[in-house]
Image (cartoon, rainbow, N blue to C red; front, side, top):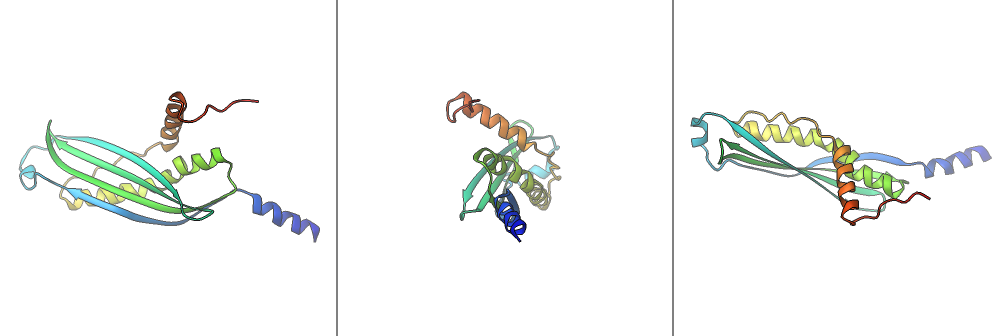
Length: 163
């Protein structure tokens, strides 16, 4: 009996992660040069911007929003289209140390959301009568590490010390 009670208490202290919901928060598409753009030779250049933000909803529930913005130009300066997707998720996250929590919210959760955002973006672009973008996977762990290094170099967050 004592063993079960001890194990139950230990289980409550174990890190917990659970996806609660994935949803499309915002979606937009503009094609300012339609229909003229369809009569031109297709020579696209793609500009991609990724952004994440997090918000604590309750004690153990967090919303993570991944924004994927794409501007595609045909040639040098003719904007073919601008598309933006905000893919969001609600996650239950408990019993993580601050460093692990930061990594989970900044890299792990966006890794989960990106395939959904990519699919929504491709669907939107195809409905605009343009070829699908077929965006490559993104290494959010590397982007997170770069952002932490940048923040440490600029003094925005303290460098971890070894004791």
